[in-house]
Image 1 (tube, rainbow, N blue to C red):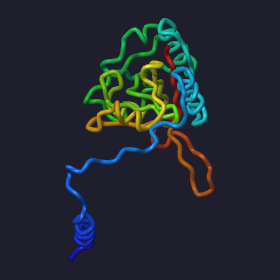
Image 2 (image 1 turned 135 degrees about the horizontal axis):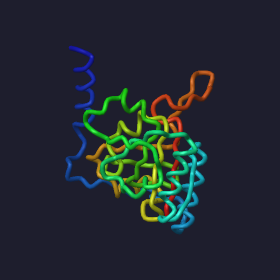
Image 3 (image 1 turned 180 degrees about the vertical axis):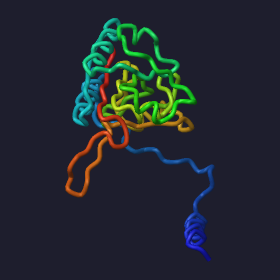
Image 4 (image 1 turned 30 degrees about the vertical axis):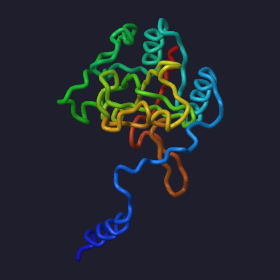
Length: 209
């Protein structure tokens, strides 16, 4: 008997007395910590995003194109990858070359792109987390993992929730979900932090409301 067979056998024995799928799952856990209004929830999101070393900006919808243009210019971005469903007006104030997200795009090609601009599916205030679900205005997962700079737009307050349980209620578990809490980072045994190992070195979040 192989190790795999032993492990699966133990799992089957452990599940032998578990009720069937018709048994309701208890979900009486705490869904949110505290009683916050919409404005307080957005403030908590901004605070936790900054705590994770994301750069947070705020603007009105009318100011969004100029802010995106300025942030890309400040980074010296000459190229930006664009999801197919992104609002074209968001990039109307930038002169950076737009790179389309296509099936044929390789990791090497995406690595040569300076920045990526996306929307998001939901943002979680208590954890400072941005969630992408691969919708047309967010694109495929790889375009937000390979370029070194990710600029993400969050519509407030409608895309902001307080807690993870509330976010899960709005997300489709069958979609390719990417959960982002700050720029990509890791630490070695000496606790030296290195950013940009598994994804963008810089995450900038624009709260539009």
